[in-house]
Length: 304
Figure (spheres, rainbow, N blue to C red):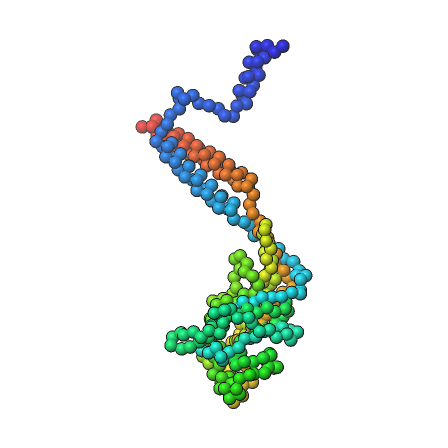
C-alpha cells in the first residue's frame, strides 16, 4: 500500500524534472520593449518560414555523368536564323551525317523562308526543323539551291546567277534559335542571340560538341542535348572562280558521355523540422536579447 509520504516523494521527483517552469501571473511584467521584440521576432519568423516554404516547393538538381550506351537514335534540331544581306531565294539549308545521308528541313508554318525588312535593306529569316541520325554531321547554309555537301554538290541555280551570287554572298546573320532536342530546364544554348557580321563574302564555321543529357523528375523523363561551340570566320577574296564555298557551316560531333540530371523534391517532414527549428531558434534569441537588454538597463539604473 502506497503511503502519503511516498506519494509526496514521487511528486517532488517529478516536479524536479519539470523543464517548463511557470511564473505566476502576479509577477509577470509586460513592457513596451518586450512588445517591440515580440513583433520583431514574429516578423523574422514569418520571413524565415516563407523562405523555407519556397525552398520546400523547389527541387534539388543532382547531376551524374556516365557513358552513353544509346548510340542509335534520332536528333531533332530546331533553328531560326536571320541573314541580313541575302534574299530567301539566294540561300538554302541542308544537313548531312558522316554516313552520307542528306536531310532537308521541315519548315515552320509562317516562319520559314521569310523576307524581312531591316534598315532599308531586305534580308531573309529561315526557320525550320531537322531530324537527323545520332551521328557526326554538318548543317550548312549555302548559296543557291545546292544538293549534297561541299565537294559533292549539284546546284540547281542558273550558272550565271550563281557565279554573280558567289562573288557577293555575305553570310552576316543573327541566330535566334539553334537547339538540339526538347527544351530542358535551365538549359542555355550558346549560339542563340549570337550575331556574326562580315564585310563581304566569307565562310563562317561553327564547331559544336553535343552532350547527350537526360532530365528525370518524379513524373517524367526527357532526353535531349546540350552543346558547347567554337567558331572561325574566313574572309574570301573575289575571283573568277572561288576555290572555297562561302556560307555558314555548323559541324557537330556527339560526346560519348551522358549527363544525367535528377530532380529531387524536398520532403514535408524536412520542412516541418526546419520550421520548428526556426520558430524555436528565433524565440530563444529574442528571449536572450530581452534578458540582456533588461540586465543592462537595471545596471544603468543602479549606477544613476
